Image 1 (cartoon, rainbow, N blue to C red):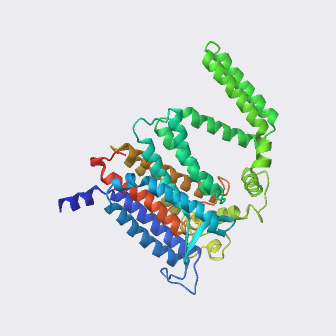
Image 2 (image 1 turned 30 degrees about the vertical axis):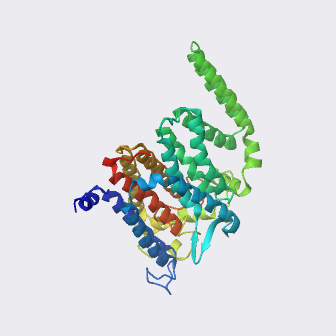
Image 3 (image 1 turned 90 degrees about the vertical axis):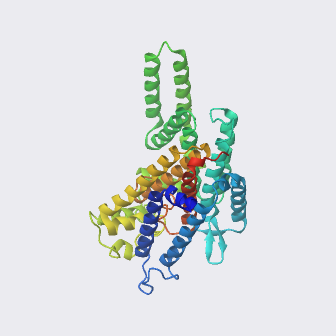
Length: 421
């Protein structure tokens, strides 16, 4: 009896309630996005919203099972989870079903399993297990390379599908390495190269190179007595100039045509509201038309007349904006921010390095999905096919995020008896 009471009180029910709230919000918005008057019941299994209801029930059951397992189970079987997902990622390339140009699903009856979603979960687990091992430090080259390999192997296999959205999600795990000691200079350098790439598309190279020379020259003049800074500045200058000169080649020969079209649309280098820019334009119209309080449930005209493609999946947030308005949108965004901050809080209070590192992995994956998905619906980022956690339609997505979150909740409930990998 005492163990049962201890289990009940140790579970972080605040996080569980946020999970249930987001699942419910998703269910009702899917109902609004693909509402069919011939199937008005929100639990009709012949519809997307009826199937989502079944998957939510399944997710709750799955979360409950995770909470009943021994915490040591996750660390002990991590290599098995990772291996199974790699096998599924190979299998999907052989027998997978192609949907929208991506061969990312394995058909199991009427259910379509998407291995890439579960690969995020197993990668977070294995990364946590490895980084929490004795004598492993990301400041050492060998340890860093192994950690990167854990991330890159599933990432490369998913890229072969090709699923660019899920591939990019794995890049967010670099922040887990930063939390565990990776130099901030790596993140700064990555940010600089991303900025240089964007500037390289918007401006002539000569102007950017001139700016680089001015900045580097100023830094060298200020720190002229510090040979180390002069050397690093000079190296950064040469690398930056070399990178700027390769941007046209990268953009033309490495980035695929459909990706170039989306980037051009995002940067304003091209505008085709009937082509590549159609989805985002209709999404922004839907969100803007909701004004402060929204048009009301099932009253969104952009939603009811299917102006926005993929509105139950990638563009589900524009349904929130149109029918719930600014107030509803802020509420949903607030729930996500609260959830992410809560996850970080849970991670930081762990006594086990495995649990802490895993918690940061969960935070990174959920934040990336949240930021990119909402960003693409308002035109803040290029269009990338990526679901909104717990809200977008899809069983694989919902269940993989459920596993991610409830595993952390379980590890947190046992933090006083911290596990060691």
